[in-house]
Length: 350
Image 1 (spheres, helix red, strand yellow):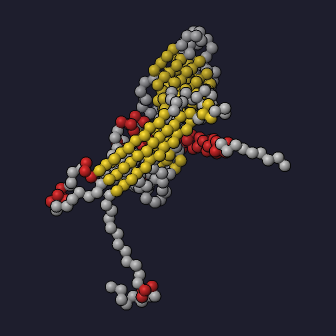
Image 2: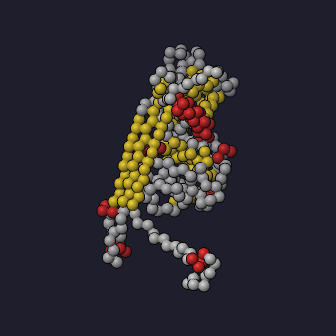
Image 3: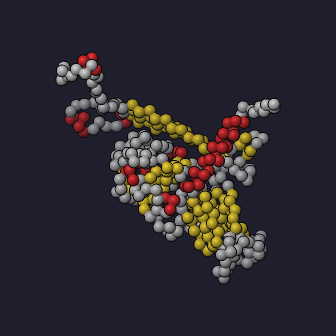
């Protein structure tokens, strides 16, 4: 019998790769699509054109070919910014840059016209701002990565930021920090909180039939974007009738990047409220500390894989946040049963 010994670092790597492969199927449910039609200068369809889609941050590449009607469709794309290059023999290649795709969006580039010329010549086009969504009837709005960086939230609660979107109401006016009940008081278009659906990377995490909260509350620096679909659901988004909140987590890029943060709030920074002043009461203790970090990049294992150079790429991202809350709580009182009561005698019970 031959015994195979694995090095101690092989097993964790295998587990990581299996986990990443399993996560890809779930993430595909929170992806976008780029489509278009390749035509010549007269508007006739051009089949067989090679379409290459490159993600700007990761440099991940996807390729496809236009069909007999000149149509191409690149599905299951991670949210982000892309460059689309269309090539065909005897025509000048066309490159369309700054094509932004968000969660569940079908970005239609319309007709991509190729001009007769040599392959050495090329035409560069900068994409316009995202047009009005005409591919489906869903009414959606997105909190982008730029919004997450530029809009300050006191408690770093991602659900509190959704109130800036049309149709979303937040009944929680005091979000000091993220908690397990953060999503409870979020409603969409006036529907009950229990009727909404909450997903992270395409996986449902809402408390079905309960209080309408989410089982997972990510810190803001771990979120790439958040999309809310208010109504007009497509087939894959019709699980609940009270709106859909789709959270997409960050992914590592082709370079190593990291961040760290600290949020500290103290009672000495705040003024005492009016009612405490008139009753001559001191300010209550208010000591909240939120700290965390995030780090991501390409998967690099010396001698095995280097995602910075390989055509097939694998990325990682990890983030943690810690909350320390020191504030007065409401005193709860409970009476324990006496010896007589434990024996079934309640004659002395007041």
